[in-house]
Image (cartoon, rainbow, N blue to C red; front, side):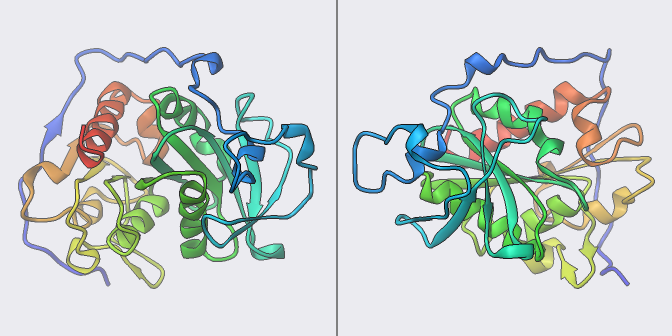
Length: 271
């Protein structure tokens, strides 16, 4: 049974007219991170990407991350790097792009993969973030941590967590322990299996916004509300409609949801 909470006022936002943002061109990516650059732990000049053989296992000196480079998924934009992190069947497939010291991990929904956040990865990387997403591996917590480790090893000094549904629940639950810069959770359940993602349990004190649809048939808005801190009225946004998780990025409120992500990241990274 899910923990109960005191009813709270909701913030209802509606869109005057459906609209979509233009997707940034792949060429807009600022200094797309090459896999070879991750192996240059002691040199100012990254080695030639051709020098990193596909299938080779690389251990990053900046963090204890062992990864095996893989061919990029067809759904990913050109220039996005990909690798398996971890061991054998429990490995997490991670894809990343961008540059800089501000990292963002995009966690997919239950059963989701790197393709689920492919467009958002490009959009955020074009804004100057170092962005990673992943396909769930053998252990959910280790998948999130593995993606964070890759970004930190690649140069991220601070990392924000953005997730949808199950990914949103794990983002909130791990935020305090991972010292996340900010959290955005789209349609997160308050509990998922043994995971308790309620605000009372995760105790995250940084910028956090939970977004839910009033008519969500997969995760009721009342559950998602429990992930947002009660003492912050701006931490929970309830939208009209029934879009769940990543569907919020393509529906009638897409621009508003993108704005929420952008504003929360800006707050977490200090503008």
